[in-house]
Image (cartoon, helix red, strand yellow):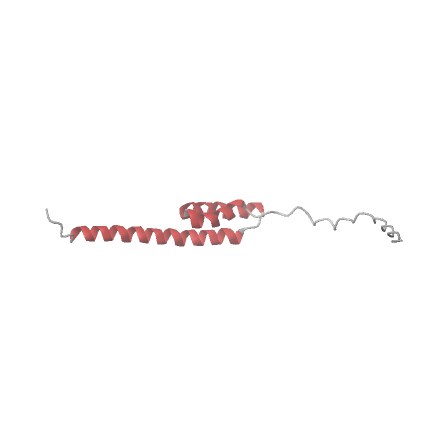
Length: 104
């Protein structure tokens, strides 16, 4: 008739895990990550978090020094741009009020 299906091959032993890791790895500093995030959200907080992250990184040995540096750079740039925009807007309102030409 149809013949018989050949038997399944025996299951081999479970595989071994890889070699152990060289030791506990230090993760990325959370404040460094938050500094970079807050550079785009609320840059003054990014400045504070960046400086705190730099201080922690000196003693903890964690990774994230470049993240904290970029968080600081971007936070200072965005804060400066925000201040320039606010000062320009205030100057525009002040000078427009002087020459306003409003009649009563």
